[in-house]
Structures are given as structure tokens and as C-alpha cells.
Image (tube, rainbow, N blue to C red; front, side, top):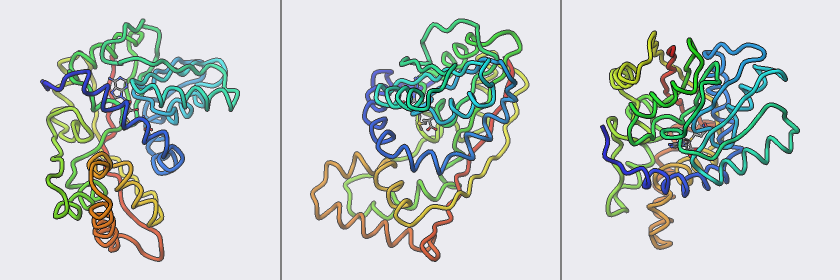
Length: 277
Ligand SMILES: C[S@@+](CC[C@H](N)C(=O)[O-])C[C@H]1O[C@@H](n2cnc3c(N)ncnc32)[C@H](O)[C@@H]1O
């Protein structure tokens, strides 16, 4: 079990959520195939009710809403106020019916057993106590309800995470270490850990398959993902302009080998996890 205090995760996502708001268009485009894969794995049917956990600005919730149709219901829950506000705004602008967003901590929120499925794209690896959180998510499901989520495989399979950090390291006092056994982006990289968490929190029929998303991005988008969305962002914010410039140059050089004719091929290596309540 991790000792990361809940308030630290909420504070982390209060800040990081604003970056995800800023980069919503890019993130939605890059990760759209992953939202589709998650929703397909949840096997949603017309008229069902689905809960999207750590919904961010709502891309997976919207994909799920489309699958359950006008007689169904899709609810997104997220701990970041900025992302929930954007998600509500997008739903309102599109005139979507049967879509709601809830600003809450999914680990502790008192859900009622009203959903047929729980889905998530990258929203379930951050719980300070994942066993408590996944037991809580199970309480949101009707008997026999389904779970489907995508999480990242290890940093060793995701060059987009490691290459920028390694390139920046010589210019910075320290760089973060990715952990596979603590809340965070790679907290569910170890499938045995995921299986143990799901078993302890009462899920059954757990299936974990690799999911790869090689969506092409431009060289500029790759740099934005590396410097704005990734863990370098908060570190660079505390550095002076010369250091930021040096890091930007080094990261650009390091990423060059992934770019051909202005297009970068960089795989998102994930797990697609399904289970039953
Ligand atoms: C990597 S982002 C993914 C966002 C969205 N699912 C997407 O794919 O665009 C992780 C999301 O999980 C949310 N999150 C983290 N911990 C949470 C918690 N305890 N309860 C609800 N949401 C949480 C964050 O605020 C953030 O929006």
C-alpha cells in the first residue's frame, strides 16, 4: 500500500489538470484509439449506465455515451475541478443528453449501485489506496457489472516518457524516478500488481492484454507532450530561462530520431484490463 497522502494527489491533479485542460485537443486526438478500445472492451449496450473514472475533460465519457445511446447514461467523475468544468462545458456545447460530470474523489465517493459498467482511460493509477478505491468502484456497479480500463505499461516500453527525462537530466538538479509500485502514471505497469489489487478488492475474471497505440504526431506535438504534459513541466517551471532553453534543445535533439518527414512515430504501450464485479 502506498503512503502518498490523498491531499497530495488532489493537489497534484489540481495543477496537472490545468495542463490537461490546456492540451485537451492534442491529448484527445492522440489517445482517441485508447478511449475506443476501452469502451469496446466494456461491451456497452443501448440503454446502459456507465461510469468513467478519472474522466478528465470527458473524451471517454462521450465515447461511452455514444455507445449507450439516448436511453442510456454516462457519468464522468474526476478530482480536478478544472477538468470537470471543461467536461461539463463540452457536454453543454454539444447539447449531449444523458451525460453528467461529478467533481469527486473516486476512491472515497459514496456511489450507489446504479451502473452496468465502469470504464477508465488512464484514470485509475493514482489512488493512494488502490484496494480501497477498486472496492469502492465495485460498489457503483449492479451485480455482474463490468470493468474496463487502460493503464500504461512500464517506462521501458514507453520512450515518450523516458527519452525526454534522460535528455534533460544533465541540466537539472534531479529528475523524477518512475515507480511501478506507487500511485502515478506507471503505478499499474506490473500486471501482477494489478491482478493482486483487483483480487483483493473483490473483482473476478480479470483479463490483462497489451494495447498499443502508435497514433502519429508532429514533431512539435511530440515536444509539447514531452515538455508541457510530462513530468518535466513542473521542474522546468522553477528553472531560469537558460536552463529551460538548454533542456528544450536537448530534448528536441533526443527526439529527432523518432521523427521522419515531420511525423513522429512513438507508441503508447498500455494494458487493457477487464474484470467483473
Ligand atoms: C492521466 S489523466 C486521464 C484523464 C482522462 N481519462 C483522459 O484520458 O483524458 C488522469 C485523471 O485522473 C484523475 N484522478 C486522479 N485521481 C483521482 C481520484 N482519486 N478520483 C477521481 N479522479 C482522479 C485526474 O484528475 C485526471 O483527470
